[in-house]
Image (cartoon, rainbow over all chains, first blue to last red; front, side):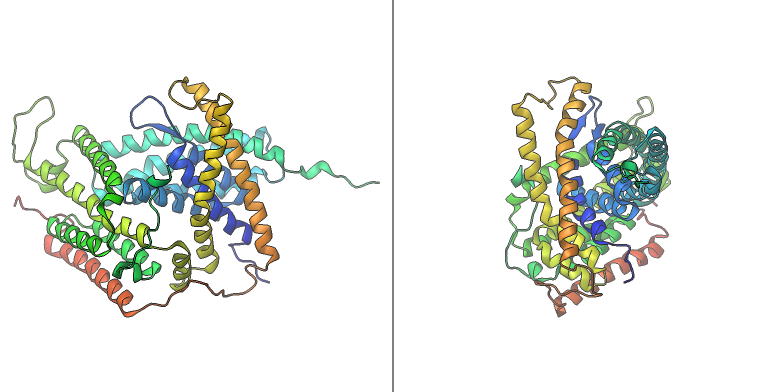
Length: 185
Length: 276
């Protein structure tokens, strides 16, 4: 049978993942004390989903989850940022084979490459794509949207870097190590 | 917490009888129109039109009043931020400067800035009724079925259906874990210092996330065992076919987007400029 890009596991990961992303985005936010900036645990979870289930799951969890969160919280979707959530999930997910979390081998090397990927993807996403879309769609002042994008992006990088990395280390430990079995001579 | 969530409210109205896919398409076309245009006249028409739609839907104002308050507060903050960052954005866009007050440092109020911020606020407000209607009048399972009808792969449609199905479930898990950890003295309120607070939050989200990941495993195994995804097509229990009303609704919104684009040529750009 031809394999679809949506295998059953990816579908369920999108469904249940979106639900959890949504709940985290709505209820588990840590204010930093600086107005309008907060540590969003939902992005740490998005990074985990992307690193474990790949780019398709990452994209849809970010996109649908953020759209749902926006509509229920603000009554309308801030599309420029919703798209970026999708891009962040997609971007981190593209490298999911490199991280080898599923094989239980989330070593120092993987941790470093995971963080390089998430920092680059999020900087481009929040610092560049989101503000440019804001200007195109809403014609907001450039200095406002770039400041907003960079500030939000930096906090999300911190969230993924700290909480996301910890989650991945914990997740890798629950996996059976690839090298845990060996042939008997 | 539960009543803060906007969910499907079962009623019988013209809007409720449209299929979920129609409402999604209408919502997307509507958002596109309001995102593209800066023409005040069109935005006002859209807003009036959407308020009429809202009253047709029989949804009571008191069910959404809390969210409206929240939105207005958010819009106010955004407007203040725009003004602080650039009090001349309006003048730049409309190419003229009608001073209404004197200048204080780099700040002054111009008619153009007020008009620009009025438009931006209109743009946001005009999408709210369709977005809320989409959420409040669409039954989740029916929505998944109708997504499939308009050509979205049934696998992805099913994923959307799972998402709606599991939001209340995950929320309940979250509450349980939160209370269990709080009973053990884990505090995530502002009484804790930031580092400790992050640690405590991790103590709550780790069990939540890992039980969810286990759930993904279980559900996908069950679906595989029952042969999900074996065939190219799938039937739906609550699927509905498009009726005349659905097509009319989509056509009207298509025309709206057309008008939006046509106004681009009339106004020579996205902005309607009364200052010329």
